[in-house]
Structure formats: structure tokens, C-alpha cells
Length: 359
Image (cartoon, rainbow, N blue to C red; front, side, top):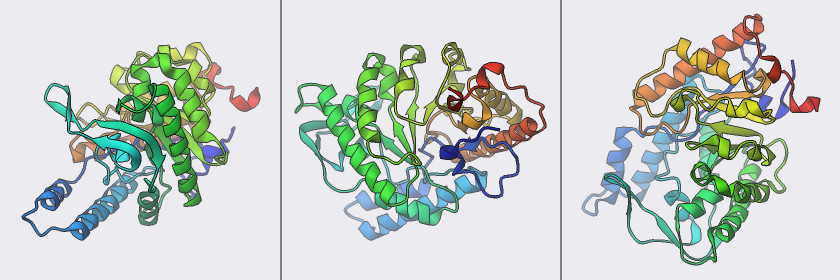
């Protein structure tokens, strides 16, 4: 059986099966209700809940959700992004050149605190190193670090300083590279770049590619870099994205009932596939047998040694008990599929038998 050293570094020593399909999450997870209440107390000037109290509350939430991921059986965990608000806002607060001028209505009654770039962006304080070190200390399993990508950071902001969003994205990519180097120095070995804007503006896939080249520059090969893209028509960016310098693509497919799966079989999928097998938009826990069927769909695209399993997207909008149930059933389904692969009960399509190492 072919091995994938970059992925197999995350295989638990006590893994029960010969086959190994790595299980993880995309990033966000429902916050405990008490954490939201603590934030309200902290922001209330009439209350004595101070900065130390608020920091302690976030620490407690990070420990709780990290433990919840481990209890679900995930091979690689995150802290559920307990310290973060929105995926652009969190980073914009930490990058010089950004400012905030109030929330913007994006759809219906939903508002987004969309930042403006008013000067050249620059790296100031570390964004995620403290968060990673805290989570890694709290966790017994490997920790993945999700980072909003430079293209989305540029595309989902008002650009008032650069000639175009392309130039802004490239400068932001250099900052992301600097942050990843610090994370790697701190011990991180699994980085996920989140670029949801790519699927909504697919003609810019070359810009994203150049951003990723800058991000991956001088990063050791044993550091696993994934790209998460959700929503949109994948046929408009595939197979071009195979040229990106990443190890895996994390794709949302369960929500669309895998109607786009054939997009990735028309041209050989030469990277690892992180397949979404539970729907982050449905507040019901999928049965194990249904999830197993979804996992097997991934084997139509890549062989087992290049398959990673996760939810479609971040699950922060789900009820917490539903999110946990999805994770728990997902892990059980994966372990059962591994056992069936060991027993030769699952026929892997011939088109998936080749790996890049065979080229």
C-alpha cells in the first residue's frame, strides 16, 4: 500500500486499521452559549467583567472544544476558532493598513463588519502563534491551523489604497507567508488556507496561484498545506488549481449531493482530496451508513492513501450537539470504511490506483 509521509505523520500510533483516512474539521465550530454571554459582559462598560476574565473565558472555550473534537475521535483537531469572530475581520484587526468604519449589509438582515484597506498592508503582531501554542498544549492530538487566504482578505475588503485587488492580494500573501514561518517555528505542521472567494470569482484562479506560490515559499515539505474552497462551480477552476503548491484541496461536495464529483474525474486528481462528507448547512446528524456512502465517493477520485475526510465547511452555525454528532458519526464511518478496505470488501476504481509517485 502506497504511503503519504506528509499525511501519515498525523496517523495515531494506536490506529486500529491498516488503511488510514485522516479525519479532521475545516475550522469553525459552535461557540458555547456561555462564551457569547461572557463577550456581552466584557463589552458592557457597566459590568466588572474585565480583560483577564474575558481571556480566561476564551481559554476555557478553546480547551472545551479541543477536547470535544478529540472525544469525537478526530485525528487532527482545531479549537473551533473560539477566539475568532468573522474570518476576515479577525485578521484585518491584526494587519497594519486596515481600518473599520462600521458594518455593511451583505444579504437579508445579515451584516458584516467589512474593513477598508487605507494604506499599504504590513505585518505587525503575530496573528495565530499564541492561539496555536495554547491549543497544541491543550490537545493530545495534532492541531491544524486555518488561516484566511490573501485573496479572500483582499476581495472581501474595501480597497482604498492599492491600484487593484491583485496587488493587494500579493502583499497580503507575503504577510501570510511570514505568519506561517512563525507558526512552523512554533511547531505547526498542518496549515489550511481558506479561500472561499475563489469559487465566486473563478477567473482569478491565476492570482490565487501566485498568492499560494508566495505563501509556500521556503516552507518545509513536511509541513502540510491545504486549500479550502467552498461553494461555486468547481469546473471553472479545475484542473487549473492542480498547479497550486498545496498538498490537499478541501472541497464542499455533500451539500450539492456530489453533483460536481465528475468534475474531478475528467482530469486525474493529482493532489490529496479532503472530501466534505457531512453537510454543514443541515441541522441533522447524518447516519453512519449515509456518511460511509459519501466517503466511498471520494475513492472514485483518489486512492485511499490520498483521501482526507472532513465536514463540508465550518459548522459554527449548527447547534453544538448536532455538530458533535456529525463529527462522531463521521469518524465512526471512516473507521468502518478503513476496515472494509483492509478486508478487500471495497473495490477502489482503477482510475484511482495511480498516485503522483507513479509518474
